[in-house]
Each structure stands twice: as structure tokens, then as C-alpha cells.
Image 1 (cartoon, helix red, strand yellow):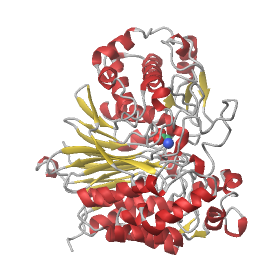
Image 2: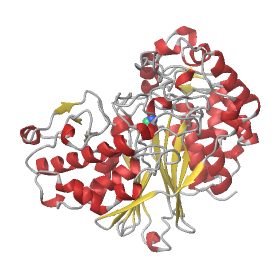
Image 3: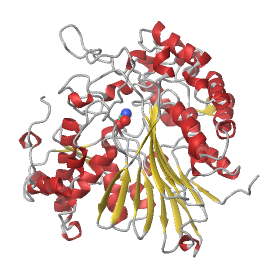
Image 4: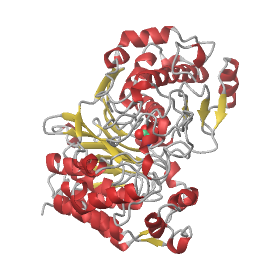
Length: 563
Ligand code: GLY
């Protein structure tokens, strides 16, 4: 066994742990230390275990992802999907691993509408009809086989162990169980695992997931076939169909991970590497930065700076609604959307003294804490390999449904499709026909695992937060470009605009009293959010001093979770 690399992990109560290895940064651009930032200490420990066993950042990513499925069952898991952005140090290759869910073969554009064409409330959110075909298990196998050094039996071991021994309920887990109690009543297997004795468990109570441990074992032993064929697949399909879902064995057996080229852009000398479709993240991020490139943000007063950032957000989200969806079904105008000339046109319509009403932009389709669902982690290993991983089952506890005998919580990611044109989804996003439901199609996402690279160094970032993910990554990215460290990036107060609703949502402290009155005077509608935005996890590496920093969002740390 190789000696354990020095690893930086975040522990509860620690804002960030900083390690410096002077001189190492310049030596072949390898940091010489490893760093992990993730939403749960057991996931970080699993990543450390993989690195300690001689694994690389990709092995750590597999171990972290699988463990998050067990310890954050409300946020991601084997019943959901994932995007991992990988950087391989030996050849400098960046690759985006798309393990997004797909619509089942029997899915139809009108499957969530009643006979009058109205959306049936809850149908795309609760129960097995809301679930896309999961991609995360295939993604874990893909990364292990193509990029890792360790067998899955090794990297999945911590997740299996924790699923068998139990995870103590923490506050987030409990809040989510309260929120999903009514939907969960339709799934006896889900109830049996998460509501012992039929009640919401108290913090500290142990939740054991023996069926999930068995499912993970089959995945570890048999790879793809251990989940998508054989006993696990049989139970998944039987459980889904018995409860009114439409999955087939063929849907699972034919699932494919897709390797994609990330979206790239350059802003003030910083290279942005981010998520391509079926995520709107990279296109939105680069488009917003292209718009902002025409302003000298550093010379603007706070209110004006925020005004132009909001106007860039508005325009990018308008295009998200209008054009974006799975590129295999409706090729979008990506080159146009990423082109600086296009951004220059968008910029020309921004007035410094006045908000642009969203309704005045060329026509689009007519008509929480946001960090409790989905999860993000960032990893850097001592050789300079990196992973930014954002994983999801969509909203809290996904569909609140578990096929009996699997331990797998199914996603409700079908709600990310345009269920009906002009009708907003859970995240108040609207969409066009580019994102309508079609068999085998991947629903449009906002998950934005991202790398920033410059002469200064590297930032690895991302966050949960539904539609707000892209703007959170933008604000953190702008801060890093201005010289901020990882802790500052995750702690920033956030604001957000997504075209419709035509409102700037903001966290307490994101806008000063003066900025509020100046933005309102320009015509912006402002809405103070009662909940925090996101749960960002960032790793940065500074070439000049070799400093590696890992930082976890204080919004996650502040919730007094019991581990
Ligand atoms: N389910 C949230 C997203 O993918 O954007």
C-alpha cells in the first residue's frame, strides 16, 4: 500500500484548513497536498480513506459520492444523477462525466397533465412516476474503471460500512423527513428506513440502510450489471411499476454515461471550465461573464455593480428558458450563446439607470433553503488531479419513494423537464419545447461543477441550490477573480435573478440599505429570502505560495447537525 498522502479535510466547526508547501506548486504544477471539501464529514473521511489507500482524486470522488448517498439521502444517491467535472493532471485533460437521469421509454410530453391539459399538482414530484432512470451508479462505475486506480470494492467500502452500521440523524435529515412525511406514506419501504416506528426520528437516532448496503455491494462486485441488470434492476422495476410508475428493464439496461467536452470561456485572463448541456450551467456562466466583460466592475459603485450583474443574470436565464435542453433532441445555438458578439448585443440593451423588465426582453415562453437538495464536493489530489462533483435526486428526498428491497431513494428529476410550456417548475423555472419530455431524453439541469484557472492558480467549485446554482457560482467566481480566498467564496451573501419571476431574490446582508434603495429606484423588485441559498464547497490552490485551501459553506456548518 502506498503511504497516505497528507490530506486536508474539513471538520465540523472548522472554517477551512490551510496547508502550505512552499515551492511545490511550481514543481510540475503539483500541489503536493490533497484537499477535500464536501457537505458531510463522513464523506470527507471516505475520500481521505481512498487517498490513503493509494487512490487518486477520481477514486476519492467515487468514495465521496457513494458515501453522500448514504449520509445525505435527501440530497443525492444511487436513485439519482450526477455530473462530475474531472481534470487529469498527467495530460491536462478536462472531461465532463454526464450521469444525468433519462426519461423512461414510456414517458410522454403530456404525462403530467390532466384531460384538460392542466398540470396535475405533485405528479412530477412525488412517487415513482416522478423518477427518471438513475445515472449515478453508472457514473461511479465509469469513473472507477476509466480514471481510478482502486477497485470499486475498495472505494465503496466506507459507504457500505456506514449503510450497515447506521448514520446518526442530523438536523437537515430530520427537517427533510418532516417536509416529505405526507408523500412518504405511499412508500412503505421508504417509511421503514427513515421513519422508525412511523415517526420522524430525533437527531442522533441511527438510521441503518441494510438494503442499500446490499445494493452497493452488488454494484461493487458486478459493476454496471450489479445495478442495471439482475436482482437490483428487477426489484427497481417491479417496485416502480407496482406503485404506478413506468420504468422497464430495458430502460435500466440501456442507460449510458456520456463523456462530454466542458464549456470553456475566458474572462479577464481567467479560464472558466464548466458544465455543458444537459446542464445550463456552463453556457449561463460564460454568457454572464461575457456580458460583464464589457463593464469595468471594479470602478462601479456597489449598487451599479450589482445592477449590471443582475441584468446579466436576467438575460442568461431568459436564454436558458428559451433555448436549452438535451442537445441530442434539439440542438441549441450554443456557439451563438457563447459568442462575445452575442453578449455584446445583450450588454447593449442594459441601461445603467434602469432595470429591464423581463417582459420587455424578446419573447420567451408565455406565460428553498436551496441547499437541502442536491450536493456538491470538490477534490484536489497531491498530483493535481481535480474533481468538481454535483449530485442530485432533485428536491428533498427526491420522489420520497423507495422500491422495496433496494434501499434506493428515487429521484424526482422529471420535474426539471418542461412539464408544460410556460408553467414554472419547483424552482420557478420555465422552459420551452427544447426541454419537453421525450423518451430517453435528459432533463435540463442547473448543476454547475466548475474549474477556474489563471496565473494565480485554480479554484474548484460548485453548490446545490436548484435554479440558483449558476448565479451562486458566478458570484463566487467573480470573487475569486477579484482575489478572494475559498472561505470568502463560500461565505459570500448571495443574490439571484432568473428572468422569471422578475424579482431579485437576496439573502439578508447581500445588499446594503443604500443598495436596496438604489436598486429599487432603478425599478428592480427585490425579495428578501427567508432561507439561505446553497451549500457551496470549494477547494483553491494558489500557485504563487503553494497554498491549498478547502472551505465549506457556513450555511451548511451553521445548522448544528449532529454526526
Ligand atoms: N435538479 C436540479 C438541477 O439539476 O438543476
